[in-house]
Amino acid sequence: MNLSDFGRFSDPALLILSSLADGPKHGYGMLGDIESMAGIHLGPGTLYGALTRLENAGLIKSLPAEDRRRPYELTVKGAAALHEQLSLLQRLATTGLKRLAAA
Image (tube, rainbow, N blue to C red; front, side):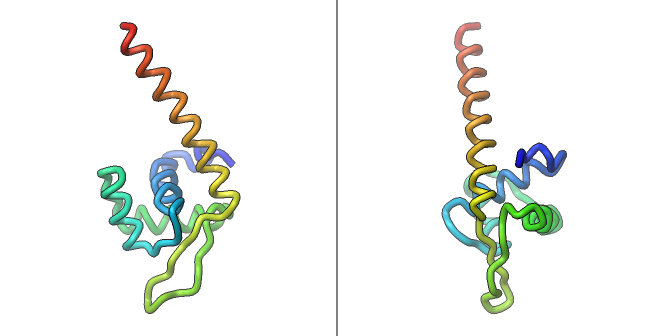
């Protein structure tokens, strides 16, 4: 699955999958992790809408609730999609930086 299938929601999806790459987190934990990792503040509506889409696509799965918080974890399919997307972004960044240096 290509994250571009999420259209304008691909950026939150990429941030969420990246956050979950080092282990399960609940929504509030993801918000803090994304802010510290990328300097991007996601609103709760954006986060939970993207979580629903990612879960429906089989890229993440919810775990049993801890207190009132429901953690999520990356699935094998989600890890593969994240790897594919990050590899593409890495190639793009490398090429763009080389072109800038040559200009």
